[in-house]
Structures are given as structure tokens and as C-alpha cells.
Image 1: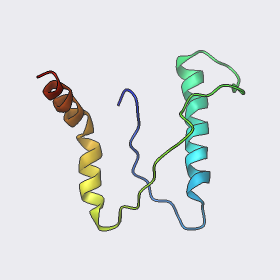
Image 2: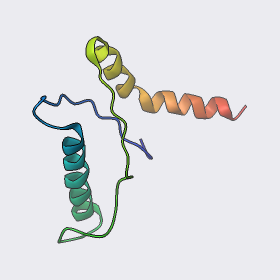
Image 3: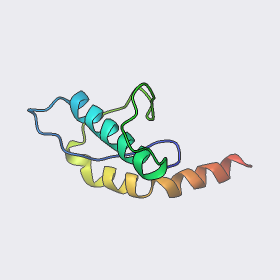
Image 4: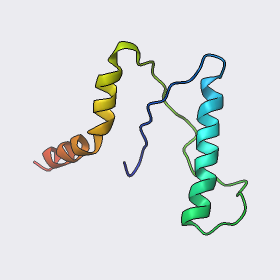
Length: 85
């Protein structure tokens, strides 16, 4: 999506959710800065991602969540079109 990201991952109990999310946000920000912004070194003091995040336990609904993420862009486009009327 243009303004947010959905990720479905499995985190082993030995890792804190905040550690994993921080790692993903940090490494992806560095990679994006190097790939698309032409930066050679890590950038400190700047932010790429928003401060917060939302986490939810999936459990038995994993297939439904996977389908939701897979079709999210189409659903958002439908909602935007409906809002026009």
C-alpha cells in the first residue's frame, strides 16, 4: 500500500515483538535509503517509518488474514470508488 504495510510473520517466543518490529523497520529503512535515495551510509537522526505499529495474534484465522493481506489493495480501491458517490 502507498501509506502502510501489512506483514504476516511468525515470531518465536524467545524474541520480543518490539525487537523484531524494530529490526524489520531499521533494516528496511536502511535498505530503502541505499536503494532509492542514493545513500551510501546509514542515516541517523532521521526517520523513515512511523513510530508506532499494530500487532495482532492470528491463530486459527491465518488463512483469512493471508487472503485479506493479499487482496487489501483491491479492497481499498473499491472503498475509494464508493466514497466518490
